[in-house]
Image (cartoon, rainbow, N blue to C red; front, side):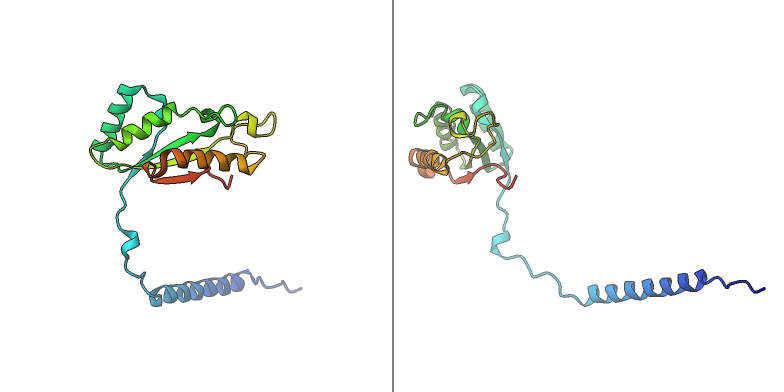
Length: 168
């Protein structure tokens, strides 16, 4: 009676040879690929920034915080603009906190770029029993709010970002 020959050793050897050939091929491809192009003017250092909700601070703390941010060398300030808090009733925005922030940022000794993030939806503009991160029922409602913010602050705000993480 003859015993069947084990082919595992041969199969393993073939697999090892194929793996070595594939590794050599990919190494060769990497060596012959062109280097990355040099950086252009768009990749210049644009500075660092921070996202910070400054509406939580009183006047003295706001002044101190902005001074510390400037002393740290930060040039971008990303301020969340919670629509749900700024316009709790339709057509009646409460500008008090945002006026204070925009005014103090504009009076800093060194320019800070202000990014304003229009986010959250007031209860009156979203479906019942949904969280503030729910988009509004009527897109025109957030459009009206965005227009009101842009009209009030214009170029005092350097960049407007519509919604926080809209892809979620």
